[in-house]
Image 1 (cartoon, rainbow over the protein chains, first blue to last red):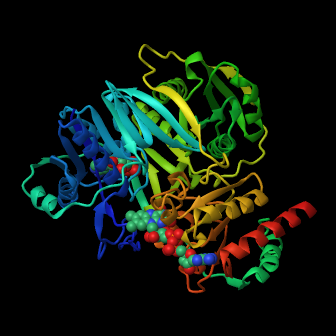
Image 2 (image 1 turned 60 degrees about the horizontal axis):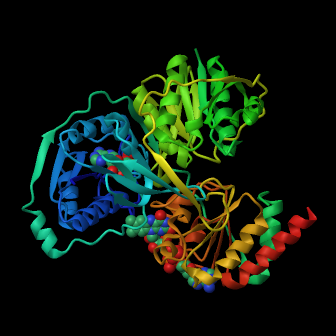
Image 3 (image 1 turned 135 degrees about the vertical axis):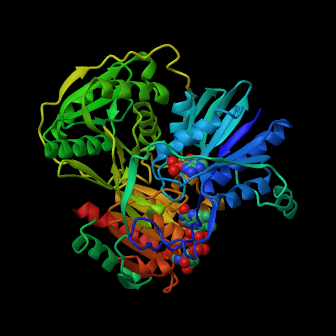
Length: 249
Length: 329
Ligand SMILES: Cc1cc2nc3c(=O)[nH]c(=O)nc-3n(C[C@H](O)[C@H](O)[C@H](O)COP(=O)(O)OP(=O)(O)OC[C@H]3O[C@@H](n4cnc5c(N)ncnc54)[C@H](O)[C@@H]3O)c2cc1C
Ligand SMILES: Nc1ncnc2c1ncn2[C@@H]1O[C@H](COP(=O)(O)O)[C@@H](O)[C@H]1O
């Protein structure tokens, strides 16, 4: 069975966000970009399924600008077999993104399509289930662990208060969260091999972008408050403050 | 025109608290736009009992889709039901709660309706007849004002941020019978495994008690649990990534950029250093209290109140004092 994994290039989570002039985008200067953390976990899951089966290909796909080549190469270095770059300008309009990805995914024969539960830039948590809806495939979101059971897949969804276990017929779509699939580091050999793996580039222009960022703003700075005191002796005063001044107890 | 639909989530026939937030938000915006708020509940036969109560937060009508096959959350079928109701009306907007269910359902509904979706919205206003949306990006390191040039405007709102006001409306309960064609149900729910500990999720709790590596040992979580219990039923436990990675706590409790973003009215960070990824997930909390033995820990830079000291000593006393206070109140 072949597996496709959608991955996105995002700022490293260490990044201190600064706004670009005009405040509709972040200032990319000095920002390090990485594979979005949950997408890396999705790649790991795909590799483990492929390796356990001993057959099938893992294709990684991204929709983004030319720099996203690096993102794809990182996934190839982890062990993915081939990559597709849909070249265009990424957008916060998740539906436009989903349509762009779905159009490309239609041409890939994949029993499973994996997504990250959320991309660590827009945090929209929507592209996976949107693609599934467009392709009319069953889908489970926020899955920390899954396993193949014949022609279906059993997924463990992380929801409030516990884990929901669901079964979907294949072909299916899954969005992955942290759980069983701790991503591997690329080996040196993997990094070398990645340079020779196929990376196909296709021009892609989303049809209609209808969700637009009008403005970005930084959250109000939180200023350091006060140290109430040291050790156990400070507890009564803290409790008094929380009740009388903050009004939260 | 100007009508707004809110999806009202229920579990075992009980409306969830977030349902009131969604309906209340729909009612507030609908009032500005000169329309009415409607609510939709989906579930097994018998759920309509609680539907009328949504009138108190502004639902003009509550449509209830009861169906034997919909007792459990079957995403693709629920999405069809919502989309069918939306198509049958003339809704300006559709509001979901950004709970686990809402975050799963809203994108599917948006895709069926062929309109964009703004997720996890923290501010929603009607300005000059248009709907203005604010949502956190980069895990709350920035906020984006976004516009949606499509109708209806579909959003999911972050739990705990929108307060439902008292706003009496008819709350008329009406059945909605969805078409649900062949093959509408593909997902089979096998079981639900409840996590140990409290049932309230860290992302929805109004008080969060988070622990980090400074607690030294998973055995010490009893101290945090005791503080949580002292704080009442609206409190939940949270965790730093360090203790999740160490296997002390489950990822469901992780607060931060690769965990949950929370905004409770009161947040305790105990033995947590305050790494940028952790701060991203909790910096919009109402009041932040830090307990850390290192006076230079970055967490004190965002905390409103702090105690410098050993968490293992401070925690039992804190739980005790809070219990005494609550007993007297
Ligand atoms: C891609 C990526 C994503 C990440 N996402 C997240 C995320 O979502 N959430 C998150 O939390 N982190 C995240 N991190 C990890 C983050 O960088 C920190 O490593 C982590 O938050 C540290 O956890 P901690 O504060 O529990 O541990 P430490 O940094 O080890 O801090 C422990 C603290 O406890 C204090 N302490 C020690 N003993 C005591 C005592 N007896 N009493 C009181 N205080 C004591 C110490 O002074 C110290 O400040 C991420 C990192 C990366 C690279
Ligand atoms: N531009 C993109 N290219 C490829 N995959 C994407 C893109 N945007 C989002 N995704 C995938 O969809 C998931 C959820 O993204 P989002 O809905 O934006 O939070 C991500 O973790 C990726 O797996």
